[in-house]
Image 1 (cartoon, chains in turn yellow, orange):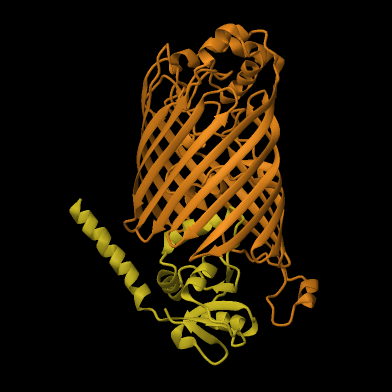
Image 2 (cartoon, rainbow over the protein chains, first blue to last red; image 1 turned 120 degrees about the vertical axis):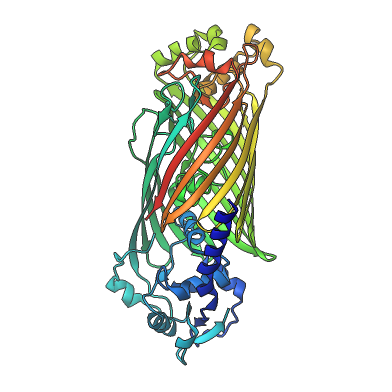
Length: 133
Length: 420
């Protein structure tokens, strides 16, 4: 039993390591002058707020996992179960999904009230960074 | 779950595209959920059912059955522009007539008036309990099923009417207020239709990992049924023997249900508790609650739950049966008891200890195993149905056996939940 537990714990640690190492930048449109707090970002991506329109990277993407882990404190299965609640109650619709960092950047750059997250290294002048969690 | 590629950018939508705004478009999404479950009951005195609609379950009918938790649903959502959306949800599960005939659980139009205010019209969810919204979605829940002691108390899951929702920031949290009003129409048992009007107020305050919930539901219904069945039913219930000539229709039955809930979900720990008071005209008052705690260890979430319901027998009932001093009340009681499938005077007392584990085996799939130990007291002088199925038209002989004796039942349930 103890061995099993240790094994599970080790597995847990290993699986969350890449998520912690990944550097993420939360980006908005440069025209967006208002400050965005980490709490607000968490609420937007958890479907609790419509202040800005959040865009997601695909399921299983390392940047996506790192972002959710750091900003919302929720991981894979937990997040899935959470969204299942929202979607099947009609309280929120899943966020728009973009295939890559470049697509997210392009979308945010051309939509005044969009918000997204990308790899820190992919940031350029077309978007504004509001948080590096 | 994902917004599927059915999204159609309507040219009109593009033409309306506000400068710098988010694209106004029409998109249709399709999603679904389901549970395949099997339950074994080691007790043969009565049938275990997950809700009052199920005509039978594991126990007396058969030791092992698939119908307790097995269900499936599909949901279509259409977003029309940025403010209007339509949703249709159809669900199939083990129903009153022993079939899996699908029904429309929701079918409504939603208009987002402002960022924080919406109006829905049509068939909308009746959020009687904390988990009413996703009660059918096993994947979204930790336990195999919500405790019957609490969730068995009211069968209404939707209303045909209007729903208003508003959310506002208070302190560091968000308060959501929901007011719903509409018509109730449901088949409570084969041949017995409940119809009337219900209203609900639901408040939820979310802050950090905690959600506090308050709900108040009241309704006024009438019960109509097949006269032959109505005539025969009293013979099946010992304490109804005086009512063989009763009028087969009960009208103006009032009930109300108060619900207080709390849930916590942070990192590895999760907890959930709910307490309710149910008051139905003419039958004993009922109070119930449960407490559940779980801990995530990677893909595994072991959990423990305790649920209990107690009934309060009104003292006047003892005399009322013999003398029928207040015949109207008694008639009303007769009607509602038919719905509850347990006799007037028969209590709904029971407690359950549940131990289980959820295993997130793959993306969108969870496997669960749950053991329930149910204790239901009962004697000839104090019949108690608990939440077991007793005295249905299909199994009339269950009642006297099951309600007048102690039942200690052990259940083993295995389920596979999925969403797509």
